[in-house]
Amino acid sequence: MSSFAFEPVIGLEIHVQLATATKMFCGCELSFGQPPNTRTCPVCLGLPGALPVANERAVHFGLMIGLALGCELAPQSVFHRKNYFYPDLPKGYQISQYDEPLCRGGRLGEVRIHRVHLEEDAAKLIHLGVSGRIDRSDVSVVDFNRGGTPLAEIVTEPDIRSAEQAAEWLKLLRATLRRLGVSDVNMEEGSLRCDANISVREVGSDQLGVKTELKNMNSFRFIERGIKAEVARQEGLLIGGEQVIQETLHYDPSSGRITSLRSKEEAHDYRYFPEPDLLPVTISEQMRSRAEAEMPELPVDRMERLQRELALSAESAQLLSFRDELGDYFEASLAAASGTIEPQVLANWVSGDLLGRLAEGQDPAQTNVSPASLAGLVQLVSDGAISVGAGRQVLDELIERGGEPEEIVERLALSALSGEDELSGIVAEAIAANADAAQRVRSGNEKAIGPIVGFVMRQTRGRADGGQVKRLIEQQLTSHL
Ligand code: ADP
Ligand code: MG
Ligand code: ZN
Image 1 (cartoon, rainbow, N blue to C red):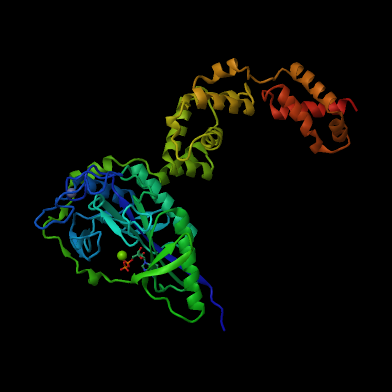
Image 2: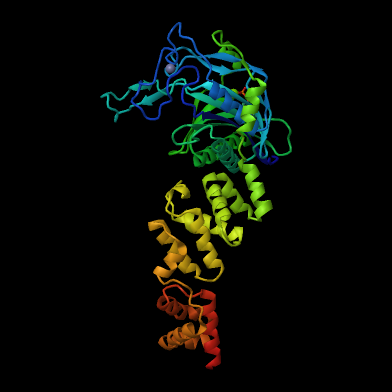
């Protein structure tokens, strides 16, 4: 028996709810947790005779996404009816785009984009189960508030080669969409949803294997795990001489199990036809230039700039670009610095001590620490006016009450003990109080210095510089041999 090495081939289909004021084809407000079925009208309920009108802002957002992904914008695109029945789609069809989408081609990072099109979201089915308010275990209810919410669907080429790469790339896409301001991109709340198309093939082959589609995964962790599980399942089939069947699958993160939802449907199953109640979308020069004018600096570009211009590490540049509120704060802080501070040092304070003091996902701009005061604090540490430990105490105080770093240093008496005389005295005391440790250091056990350093730090309440303290201890120990 020959042994095969397989490689995964993955393409993603991402649905993004657009943050417009109103729905895709009617004037209903978008709903965020409002009472069920209170944001509806004849159009989004699909009542006979109601006429849809395309949302101009959704088209604008679609164009911005297309531009950000380097797509070609179609001068004219068409809405189609995609016919199928499901309880969350009672009119029997979804308005989507078929063979004339808004955008084609493009690339984000190392993954090529196949297309971007606009469509409407379905309503939301809620499976009450035994714990539901209705006293039946087999009841599902429908909330039409979500029905008709504008969606952009982004389809990649099958360029992804691992589960980890899929999750990483999706983070880049999410950061990009967030920067564009076109969506909340909140996976838990379903404003960013991802289907993964997965196949495996022998390494070296240029043919694509039969694919399956893992539906609607709503966290990066589950996407990674789901893809891994499906790749393993397919490899198992192929190694055992069986074939992969093209189908749509569900991954259950709690059990790790993959179950079949339905055999794969083909485009012709949907009987697509042009939506007779809507005109084709024509993109004027004006619409295109308006989208271009609103294009912000994108995460990939910012990441590159932070490394090139400020010599930040790749890791810092990525964090500050993918979480743009951190990047904005960092850059505001750098601009507010009165002297020159090392950008990487400031970046380390933002990504380490400051981030560590924030709640999950919190924007530092919403705290008491102004960008200028962080810059001032980093300046004091860089100049040696306070120790790193004292700097952390200043940051605690800034988080707690805000204020000016210099005033806090004064008030809490945190300025560095750099006067060698004062420090020397404390070091001598520390050696006397830790005679055993001192003896062990003298006889070559370097690690035994710990308690002596600790004594000095306690005495000085962290104001002394650790390096200097060690140096002084070593000096005194060797000179008293
Ligand atoms: P379908 O017609 O089944 O929807 P498409 O050709 O439209 O298939 O592709 C849908 C998604 O599946 C795209 O993201 C594409 O990159 C991906 N894809 C297509 N073929 C494969 C394959 N053999 N393996 C993995 N992904 C694939
Ligand atoms: Mg498809
Ligand atoms: Zn409506």
